[in-house]
Image (cartoon, rainbow, N blue to C red):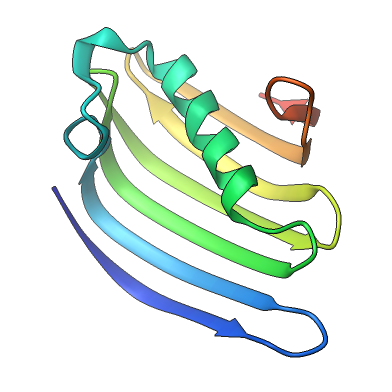
Amino acid sequence: MALVTGSAQVTWGERTKVDLDWASRWIDLDAMFGTGKTVVPLEAARGLFDVLMRQLPATSDTDISLAVDQLNLGADQISNVRFAAVRAGGPLEVKDFQVDLPGTTHLSLGGKLAPGETSPKFEGQIG
């Protein structure tokens, strides 16, 4: 399913601090979450961002860096995934998110991801 390398550090004090720096050559999200062809990749990605928002407390300082060469999502292969984000007691600031999608499509975005009524609300730039 996946081999992940890197580091994770959590510091408790006046404010909780979470630092993640992970990398992987390949992650099969379909196998991990039992999705496969039943999920549209964009919907699955939105669901993963929703989970990320719920798992990282708004009251903590967070610094995340993820790099995955290839992952399987919605029965598609996605490559060159790069994600960097920080949170300092407010919305999650996506500093960099880049991914190569099937069909020679490249997606990049950066901005703020804040909790919404039904799903996270993104404000930023998409390319």
